[in-house]
Amino acid sequence: RKEVEQDPGPFNVPEGATVAFNCTYSNSASQSFFWYRQDCRKEPKLLMSVYSSGNEDGRFTAQLNRASQYISLLIRDSKLSDSATYLCVVDLAGAAGNKLTFGGGTRVLVKP
Amino acid sequence: DTGVSQNPRHKITKRGQNVTFRCDPISEHNRLYWYRQTLGQGPEFLTYFQNEAQLEKSRLLSDRFSAERPKGSFSTLEIQRTEQGDSAMYLCASSLVGSPLHFGNGTRLTVT
Image (cartoon, rainbow over all chains, first blue to last red; front, side):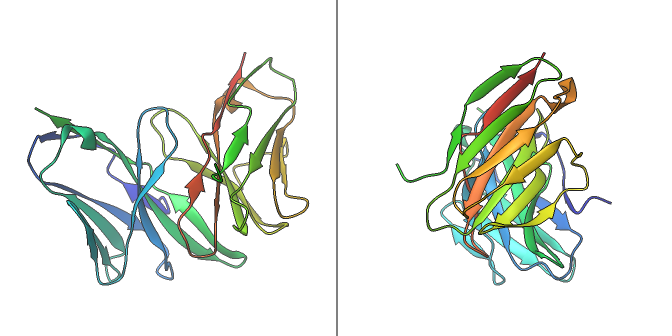
């Protein structure tokens, strides 16, 4: 089992619709969680951190489920510009400290 | 611009040659990470530093790869005797402990 896993997609989403996807992680001691967005052939850019109580930033909502060890990202009122790969990042606590590990990414395609 | 800087942006080399990449992190960040990314995959962890100490190196990394951060500021990643399978985007990121990663533009390596 991979340490951080995502459904690769693609998720084909009509413009204006809502889409949600998850990221599962293996280490129950993980403390830090982030969602990044990556456009083709560009570096990842931070979308939002994920807090224990869940958090929202405009049309984006992130949730953490510690019991089932996953985080989620929900995008409301999808825009064409939301088309991208969404990467989750989780710290994997180890003996030397917490290394930040990526999932494989979920590709989202928003269509008119 | 005080973001993360990587050089060179592109590198084309022949199989068997050595290459070295440089990363200048955000100055107040004590953590520095190296990742490798191939098309359609999420960034794969290579190694990371806290100040000048290398805390962890991926088991996937062969002995041909070495990274340094001699004064706790910039870092170099060297690949010896390059192979075609080393062709990838090499991403550097920096952060404070527990905080999100800030990425450079990456170095795209092509081994012919």
